Length: 201
Image (tube, rainbow, N blue to C red):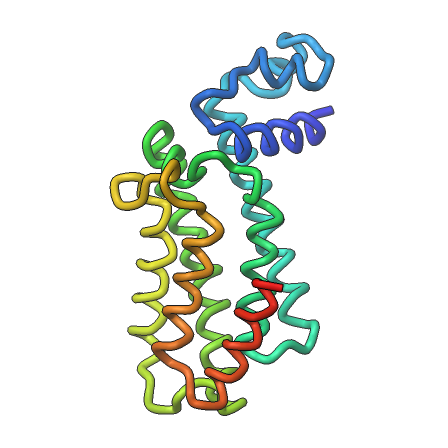
């Protein structure tokens, strides 16, 4: 039951937002009493923390699976982007922004954990892309990684992008395109254009 509550609550939080979903909403969706939820979670913040950990682990596992499928570096980035769309595609607002606003302590921990995954994933991808001739061999990986991290997570800052005016998925694709064009070789640009074309088909 505990795991089922985490899974359902995670879906609701990502779809409707961490602030707006109440313990009553979760109980009603699951057809259980609110008392049952409190049996496993003393308060909403503890449940939010558990849900964030659940989603984080799901993302980490999915990335590991994708990197073992034989994609080249640019294809791999688009596959990971599609994976994020599947997880966050139903979100009406930015989950990261809401987490930062309403649960700052959880947000700080998440950002620390996310950067560790991001650093490993993007760092490996950069090395792979250079070896494949898709990324320039004169790029400075440390700065590319930092710049891309700031770019990606900056998209979820509601003071910069208003989600009622922009589609989150479209913004993330534009960020990926911007990142790739900044470091790609001529060969890499050809692969990038193919991936962008697939999105429009």
